Length: 378
Image 1 (cartoon, rainbow, N blue to C red):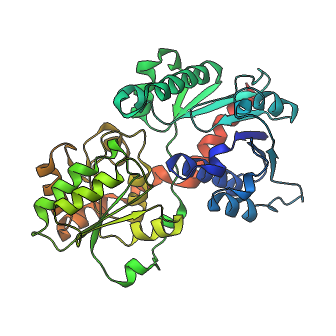
Image 2: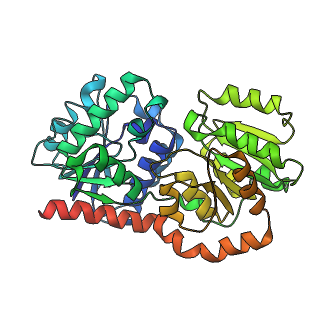
């Protein structure tokens, strides 16, 4: 089977959406090397500016088929930005692609009927929380989502919560969508941790998240201030730079917590993984998520967790963590204190193993391949 991907974010995105693209493509390469994969990018210099993980994947699987043929093909063109919308679909058909997967909420408009289109929709937070986005971004996201739903032979949702929200705002998606969770980097499942944080033998809560409004850092800082004298656990915030980073730093200074709270910004993938795995516990106060890959990564890492009581988190990890209302600092503080106890950590450890299967890379890759195969046969 010949499968094509819009690889823009595989190469260039440093956030969760890029990680989704890289993790899925790597899992398909690893577990289903009998297929041929085509990665499309609209820049000839893609490899000069690519995310390090993208380059690692390409190098690792460059010769991975027993018959000596290529596992994947890179198609990089010098074209206008709109080539991904109008041009890439026709090119995929010319290349003999049987299934084209738009990994992030969109598909080429010129994808012909001869090529089955699959689209992953991660969230419609721009509909649920419009104040988080400029109006022009909401307009673009809405238009692209509508077009993808119209064009797709099959839609993949990353959670039942996302499926519900998509079908609420786009009823035409009903009956054509399937839930397939996101896979987690196998590095999170490994027991060893070799970074500097571990060597310091520090105890700390970790919150892995970009610095944006819906990630709710402000209330988390209020909660930590309430418990600063009740625990020797510190707090580490790690994530991509964003509009709330400077307000977060200012709030930390105002609360007098500069010696207890650390901000790690724009770290490498390896540093981020080590920071999470070396933590003592995980806290996730986000107001809204389509899936919440940091939660899945904390699950794989075996961390005790205190998280927002939102539907997607309960769907993924059920009654494993301690839940709190994301806008109530006192509830959040109590939940954070509770996961510092051995009793709570033991309870979470005993309930963890079956839930980890939901995010296993091989299981996820198998489900995606089944989706492709069903479309090709039909």
